[in-house]
Length: 168
Image 1: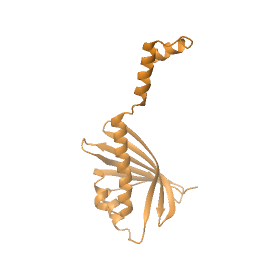
Image 2: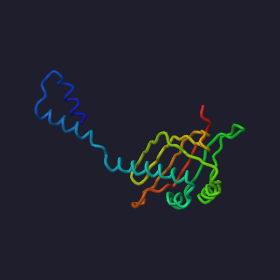
Image 3: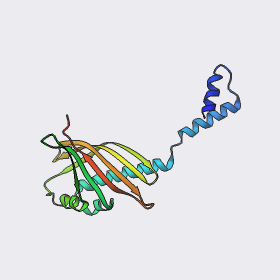
Image 4: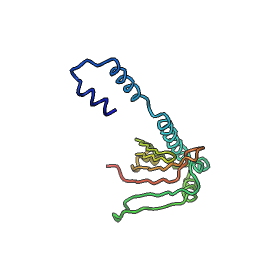
């Protein structure tokens, strides 16, 4: 490809041969074709993230448990009231018990505002900016970073870390 570009650049004022035109045309078409498996996996992962937060808002702990593989790492990174940087960890079991203990009178929703997915083989990361609403009022914003592992059957969460801060 660099040779083709260099050849085209040196022959700007010369007519393009049929062979050159066909090469350029084929390269242009190939650049329009998405990497189907990566694009498909990104769509699957983004759909899983959206479904996860739908089940999260419903407080459906049985459905939530199925998104995870084994005992995932669940962490939150934030600045506490003393101004200290904190990284807290929680077990999946404690996370699910906490969700189940939220009264029905309390409504919450985590709205994803932007998703970036990076994938390499059977490992993928979903970097999700969010807004968190508590009883229909914006509570905080942050980022969720999901690490997914594909066991050749399904994409499962093996790590989830979030940040949270007040929206300025």
